[in-house]
Image 1 (cartoon, rainbow, N blue to C red):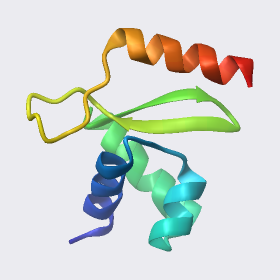
Image 2: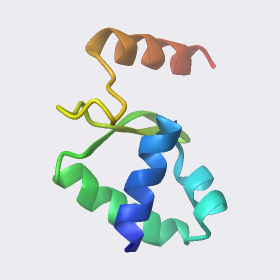
Image 3: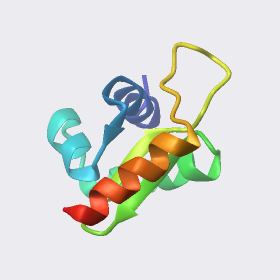
Length: 85
């Protein structure tokens, strides 16, 4: 399994995750993670919410039921919670 697949699978399992958490749990550098996340964002496989320094990456809504799905209402609520912190 390549690096991008490992990052993608980790996001899928964790539902939402920060770059620091991915780096800590998978042992990749932050720079490598950002590189692969940018590709996953361009491929429309993941999305990000929040503002630096509280940015979370989440799975994009998929047809497959095995992937986490986040609807618009949940995303708005999560953004509001992040602003309150």
